[in-house]
Amino acid sequence: MGLFFGQVLLYGFVLKENLSPLLFYALTGITGLLIILSSQFATQFLVFFSVIFSLVSLDFAPFISLLLSFVSLFVLFPKYGRNMMLGQWRHKVLYSKYLASIYILKKRPSVWLDLFVEIPSQFILLLKKRVDKLKTDHWNYIFDNPVIIGVFFIPALLVFLFSKAMGVPGHFSELIFCSLIIYLLTTLKPLRFLGEPERYLEFVFPLLVINVVLLLSVNQFIILTCYSAFVLLFYFLIQYKNRSRNINGGDRDRFNEQALFYEGLVRKIKEKNNARVFCNSTEISKFLFDPDIQMFYYPVNSLSTDVFSFSKVYSESYARVNVEIVPDLIRYYQLNTLIIEAHQSEIYEDMLKADNFDYFIENYGNSLNLIYLSDL
Image (cartoon, rainbow, N blue to C red):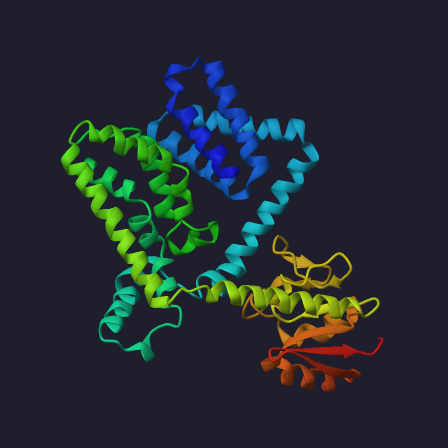
């Protein structure tokens, strides 16, 4: 929904010269309000694009439109507006200070260094058939790089850049370049917490496609050949990737098995009256939400919850809770059921013994242990 309204906003900018000022501000102001109400990511695009476009074009109508959208929000929905702004501020601070370093940057410290160093090394290892040295998810790692996505998933972008380099007059140039600026800025390490860079290009994608169609009337052979070459290259790369993974329905079967596994776990927990659950893995926790289960889960839009700060709960990785703080969590929230990954179970047993907790353990499958605590 946010993507749709974001694209409608760009159409409003395209039509600006053909609309009266009143109609332009009404259209873009209302569209901006719908963006704010429907999508956090699209709201980021709205803010960045309006500011950058106004600075690049020296036309401050988009910035005025942005202000009208936020004024409308606070006039029509004052309580929601205050809560949303506060929540967004906390979320951005949390991501920039903690989540980016332990969740985003840990996997890919630098988009550009990765593009010129790590990815070529993965291709060299593939050519040499050094499978033992490859990353376990090497294809996903390569294709998840924002620059790779921008190059191969949006060939219309390359046609636009190629036409500009050849001196061919483009269409919607300022709008496309402003999206490119946001895309490039969010590939930089300090701004990676603002989301996947390639998603900012999705808003301008329809204009890129229209640009290619219009360019065909100028030089059909060059543009069509360039566009077709990138589409075919993308197709063959995806086919090679799929063949290398031997996709034959196994992923779907594994997903179904996983769903049944966690569905059984939820039923088992619900058998225990007054279950107050803690899971050491944030990935597993997502499968356990149920109206009849009370479960500890840290809100990712808050720097603290009650007396526990985010940096203490997730001191090393967002994937797992810091073991040292678990006894305090157990006592404060009166937790009575712990769901622990099997390979972490021994660490938790040592912790519970050291803090004199009474407990017994039950295995669930081969991957999880359920630790039941006596009433505190």
